[in-house]
Length: 420
Image (cartoon, rainbow, N blue to C red; front, top):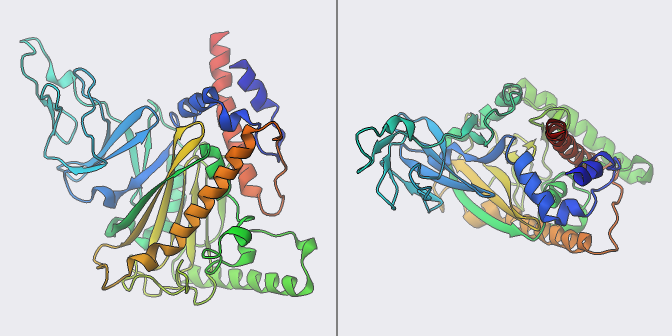
């Protein structure tokens, strides 16, 4: 532990992390304990468990979690472990349950997690002491976050207070999952997150994504602009200012809020204008779904971006939303789970064409996965040394790394002091 603490304390600000943070299984195990075991994690949306009895299983490292909607329509989370002999209870990612019965010895739990049936346990057996072990779960306007710690970070409420007005107009609870795609990226989870926190690489790698996005929306070096580029950057600044004013005027919060590295539950948001027809993340920038989200009456609601530490990012548009979660698999592989949400009454083939809906991000995710793999290959070699982030386009990557180092040190330093 002392070596890891030393590496964290000596990390050079503004630079990538040392190679062991991306390759060492021991560091990965500590990441799973400290970062994924003690912070709020995005795992899905309420439409994943839309009806009473709907259940979803999410695996986070060694832990398997059941998320379900109980008979009173409350969304709950439990460890996917029978309280008898520890057998896993649910084995499918999505299912529907009346009660939850363990296949091993037929112990039965209701949807509130209470043990309601267990044969042959004797007269003194107390059913009430053997309910499913609960997991903390919160819904932020339909986005589901869980925390595996006994005492989760308290500042989730602060994030929710800020973010609820931004997300509410899109009414995620009134959507359905039109499509989900799981992609195993050949890289450490931090490389996946770092790749997401900048668009420095977009121009060279994302021909589909850069169609609906403005090139100047994610930073640039002003001293390197030509006269024409400076004019375009100035035009974008005016477009951004005018769009924020218009959106705020119709009740769509839009301005930037950034707490990526100064809160335990770090987050950032901003609503940005879209290029072209300005309606959606599609290859022609027009809406992909005829039915708009929530009470929106105009598809030109921009793209509301929402980033959370340590494992998610989201894009809320007028006609659909895309939510992303990163779940580490081992030191050098990560699961990127993407869900496309449309109005719950939208009909595929009538209101939206699925290929058009998912096309931009299916292409972009694969391109990003390739880039993450290239970095993973590089950090394994002796030629790798930490490199500098761009001060103009990689500020959010630095904030991600700074948050990670700060959270690791906060826990490891406390643990080291307690052990001394």
